[in-house]
Length: 241
Image (tube, rainbow, N blue to C red; front, side, top):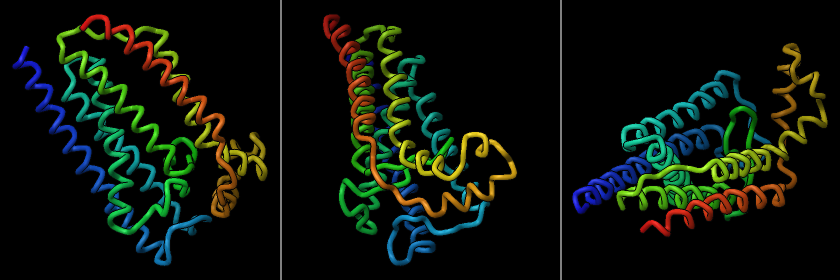
């Protein structure tokens, strides 16, 4: 038992170091980009950039996910542990990403500062506090899974818990893409969005986007649903210790 616990602790330390180092690398890239594109400070609307730069950013984000997935696949002994290490790594990486940006360039100004969170499949935007809260939620869930696994307990995820986590996550994504999607649909219909000849128009419209309001109701609902699933999971395994 002690030897197994020692292995989990060593894995935790090295996975944490990896996530923090990756966060610094990611923040360094953003520092360079903002120095080139936003010498007077980052803000909306976003500056106009060539399409190949946007494509590069999209693939950089995809590469980030692949790297996080890779360390999780190596660290976990089964699918549940791999999932736990992935969301743990993601949470640590995201929090330290903002921490390093604050240290390096003094951004964000506050937790309510808006940021572009993701570009796939559509642009996600929201106050910085929202991905930080969600990252803490991910760390909480992964912590429970890893802790119970270290106690030599066979971990399985019930369908109720999984449904709550997936549903909550989808609601979070909708909350982050809500304002941007609402803005785009003011200018283009669903049919026009799928018309390949309108891609240039979509790009031009997107360049003028300025966030107006964040859907806190949707975001809070998503977080509560995920936390409900975490609560069910914790109560189920607490009895087995």
